[in-house]
Image (cartoon, one colour):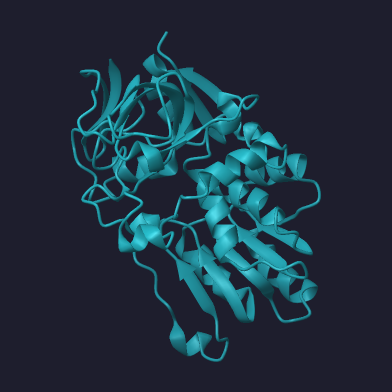
Amino acid sequence: MLGYVYVAPGRFALQERPVPTVVDARDAVVRVTLGSICTSDLHIKHGSVPRAVPGIIVGHEMVGVVEQVGAEVRTVRPGDRVTVNVETFCGECFFCRRGFVNNCTDPHGGWALGCRIDGGQAEYVRVPYADSGLNRIPDGVSDEQALFVGDILATGFWAARISEIKPDDTVLIIGAGPTGICTLLCAQLHGPQCIIVCEKSPERAAFVRRHYPGVEVVSPEECLPTIRRRCERGGADVVLEVAGSDDSFRLAWECARPNAVVTVVALYDKPQVLPLPEMYGKNLTFKTGGVDGCDCAEILDLIAAGRIDTTPLITHRYALDDIEEAYRIFENRLDGVIKVAITARR
């Protein structure tokens, strides 16, 4: 089969690889019908993910059809259409039982697919702990509708859930990339009074205005003055930081009202500094970390009910054979790209 492989920092390559097989009784092998490229894949390429293993097939956003299952798999069977979770989790350890599946204590727990074990920018992928890592796609939900369930949509859902959004809140989302837009969609489920999106890219700001006309969009320069003018409590009640830069990290806490929740969704390339003397007295609650992606079944039900639609995010489509061109477009943000769908090989 074809797979896109992390060769060394700065270098990915399309290679022929053996088709994976069931190794453990809890494994499943999935034929990938649609995949995507995530910004986290770019972090691996640029050497910003030290735990990424050279030689692995990258990719952790995918849907497909179950081809084989191990003897202990109970929730899926061959022929099922499924989403694949970005995280591997046993479902039984201390953290998994409490819903903190990103911190699963299994050696392959957390983000493993496409980072520490072979991922899904390939024709087939082996999924450990298939009962927790796969979710059946409801009838009537297309591959494109379900494509982002296991990663960026799960991230947005998790971020909105832990941010404790209330109906009278003003919510600020910093960053309108793919994960930022998924976070916006999931924040809307909580019915806040107002959502403001801060985005520096004119193309992405225009995308939000076009698809979500009820959302106010501001530039980074306009953000703090707008928040201070609009928010009688001195800032936003909830801030979700999805951009991942030094400036956006500072803007997040500056725009928060006293005693607000600041949820850091972004993955940073370098450490950030908490300027505690400047923040003293704001009494902020910071929530950070990797997604606990255990809400995929609920998200699929919401998609089936028409309450979440991420298909507008798919702006480009390429066959697996052409994945290098897909990466070039996505990495350089060319041609108005938001997300790329990778289809089966030609």
